[in-house]
Amino acid sequence: MIQETHVHDQQVRPLSTTQAGDCVRVVGIDAGRGLNSRLAAMGLVASTELRVVSNGHPGPFVLIVKDAKVVLGRGVAQKIMVR
Image (tube, rainbow, N blue to C red; front, side):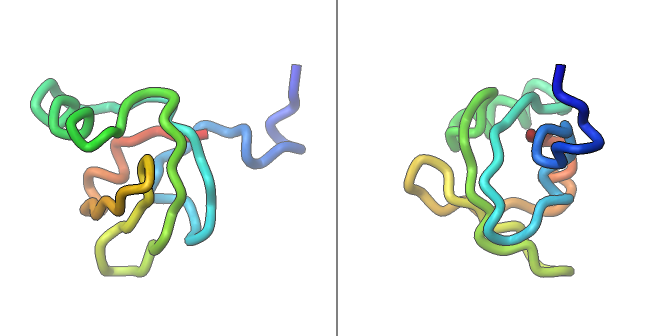
């Protein structure tokens, strides 16, 4: 078992807490059916790898998902859980 206190990247956390340049994997999405469907259409489903391009406060959240640039609002980024 990996101790989460020593391996920071293994902790499950909201996407909104990541930094520009981080590469993370989607663990789950804590949202309703409508938002889940919209995110799935953008390629954001469980086990998808993402690269954070920009997390500039208070601006939008910019990601690379499967070679496509995706822009999310902060509220949506808060609902996406990553590791």
